[in-house]
Image 1: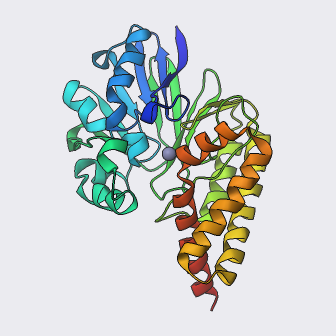
Image 2 (image 1 turned 30 degrees about the vertical axis):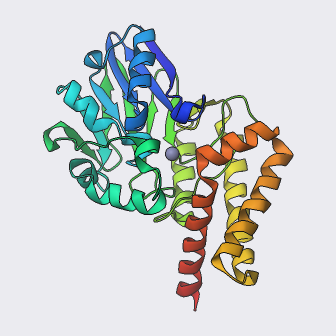
Length: 303
Ligand SMILES: [Zn+2]
């Protein structure tokens, strides 16, 4: 009657990199974070393995609009025009017209945007259901509560389902591949905000989820310990970035120093091939750019 299944989108051929959750309740089906356009065929196959087609879905729940989470939404709606796409109000305009989203992504990935994320088609406004947090979505007999959880992105929301107590938190609690001990920040530009992020941790914990579901990747079984570890790591990564920026002679030197420091840290917790998996999935270089931007904003505000 009720199911939650992890679909592996095999982004860039890598297992356990981007995951889509399939929720079922009494024959009603929704997916959380369908992934980028580049993995749409894999998503179809993964759905097929569960005996489900795109036409059997009634809703797409987006945690936020970054291409690795939401890029395939427009293509899915074109295939199944009955789909409702749930999205935060700050993200909605960019689903209707993805041109700005694509232009800013092209600045971050100038060489291989298409290869990484494929096409991002617009979602017709009539298919969108625009959220702010506080809403409840019904799927069969399952109730799904929406909470606004900015920090990673200003347009980030999380979904809390009531049957199994799973919180679908997107990137709000970082990156942790199911079964591994290490949780890693993903802090890309432009709008990471550590103060808002702290309030989002509180919003998640206050709903007492039994498990977290992370887009990168899968379930995490102890939300309280997970979030405590992640919050502390985020704070230390910020401090490390500020120190590096104080001493580095150039932006490139700062980036190199950050990458080396963090690779070494991750390597203390994980085998070498898993380090590369985390670095690639999170976009460690982008995390530096996001933290550096946040550090400079904070320094400006203080002076
Ligand atoms: Zn992501």
